[in-house]
Length: 522
Image 1 (cartoon, rainbow, N blue to C red):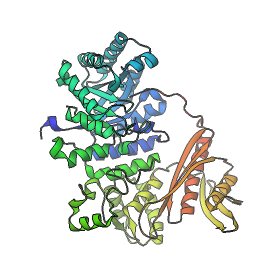
Image 2: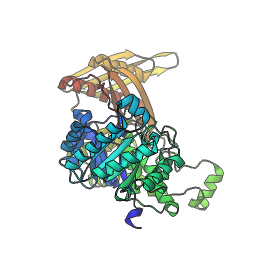
Image 3: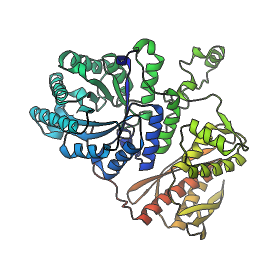
Image 4: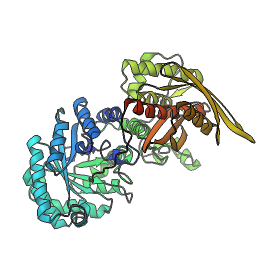
């Protein structure tokens, strides 16, 4: 395959994906995702929107400093202060790109920007030129391109190319386009824009009508050679084009598209799992490629076909996306080296201190479970890896009482960081609610529970349950996760994690006021 047949995978999980409601990540979590994206071999990582907040700036700068291999990209409006801030954040990156954007559709020009076409053209040219002063690799996006008049879109794109843009992205910002229509935009641009053959054309699609992947593939058929996507398709509103879906469509139907990517598809499932755990956005069971049911067959006729020949009902192998039909990995006699090797196979890079904590927790789990699966190990590592702050409170013991005709009660013992232990009891609507109420009585933190979910993370009667708790305190949402073979214990540990996060912010004097400002973007 020639270079013209290779598709650039531009991942925006850390930027557009993080804008998904409830999916914000802290710095360490962003770095963990960035490392996973590097191992997945994405071409470009859009690490954030540096002008949006100090946290975004720090995250882009940290990714630019720590991640080698992919191009590191920062987003900026066509404003001098945005572009300067993006350039500063990207300074440590060996390979960098500034992505500038400006809305072009009539509705955005009239109601959002209140700018004329001439003003749009001037701002676009000046933005690209300013970005070009900082780095050679400059991407330009006419926001809401799919609803922009074709003649004006051609004019803006041509001016951006003349100003020095090396990638032209055509966003379907609101998920409005149909595949045939979206593909025709690329065809029209290729036929009417001077210099279009000198740049890479890119597709950026939202999933409001469930067509983000279909639209992206339609663009590739009409000459686009970059797709902007996110892990699990997370993002604003209904989300973005799902990376795993577009990549596997190109791989499975290479006969149809004749296109390739450099993605290591065996890393798709572990990366999906990592992002799901960090963001708290669970993948639906029937999600293509990475959903729990993606390779499950219950119908008798399907089972018979699979047993006769895998290709009867499976167009790809589970192993191709990093899943295994037999993922039994470790037992109680396994050592630290085996644990580290399996962790690395699953995509986790553990330091010595982290490995010590994981190994200790693994041994405790091995005493409870006869068989430990990849999913068990993933849940265990993630629970430790993303709870690295000092613990103000630690669960020592608990007892619950519940049943028909009995008022649910809980007695709980916790230990504070100074070693002092506290005990209390409370009633609740159920045993888990009683535990939560007791924990709040002891810690003095009256958080409002917003969501509580439990799901099985592995198989068998002794499978672990993963509990996810979301609670609100002083206008800010906190999320905790924990796993245990006892779901009440998992819930208690997850809620303790939430209380520790709140206590840490209060103790550190970090503002708990929610971020109110939002900035429009593609």
